Image 1 (cartoon, rainbow, N blue to C red):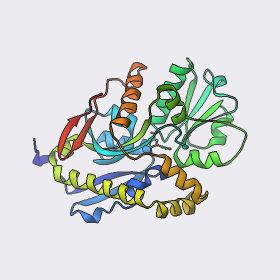
Image 2 (tube, rainbow, N blue to C red):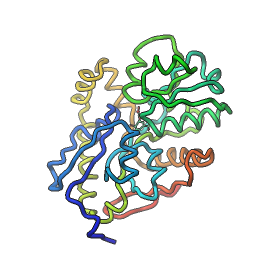
Image 3 (cartoon, protein in one colour):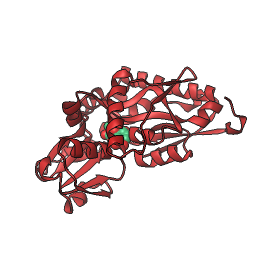
Image 4 (cartoon, helix red, strand yellow):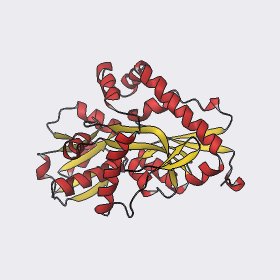
Length: 290
Ligand SMILES: C=C(O[C@@H]1C=C(C(=O)O)C=C[C@H]1O)C(=O)O
């Protein structure tokens, strides 16, 4: 069903401003299609809002936010930020082992949606804990000034992991893998459903450009590694391992891990409804079946 009313002249694309998403954006060149494109570079929480209210039509967002808006959004094929175990940048910093924080006070970064809910699932389902949560700006020391543990993601987590302040550091990707045997998908790429149905060629072209960028980046990580060293710090060995450890695909393996996460999020009331994932494929919408 094509609706002329939904055709627009400019497309707004959401770009996550963390290194973990760079491979899909690094070689993304909007000049290769003849639609006017505006790119919004922001932390996931802000992109999530834009995708859910329709002000951003296409781009990366927290996988949790896709789940929340799955009636309005369609996933783009084979794009994600996932890990199969340790992720290295979704970290809970605690003053004592995690068991002593699960009924205490936990500060949550205000930049995330997937990881804060992953932490809630882990604490409730594995530890049976019921902590008090505070949402804060992602500054470790001020977060820990009045809490037992603090959750950071992305480059804030990476920078904090380089400083040894004696905190216990728990990698949520690793805990999830140990407990479920599955990987976890933190970010997905999605498109506004109405926009996609009205502009299938534009969506197909943009999805191809993302895939092309991902391929070029993974074929040669060095330019991204160099930029990460320059902008974030650390050395090239760290960044090579960091990017190689992440997975940017969204095949049935990643879908399985994410489906379980959605199931638990619904069971615990973190999501108000069950999630059926829908994928945009060759300008067609297909349902992901578990
Ligand atoms: C791997 C990461 O994944 C990110 C985590 C997100 C979240 O928790 O909502 C959102 C987007 C991802 O890029 C990370 O931030 O370290």
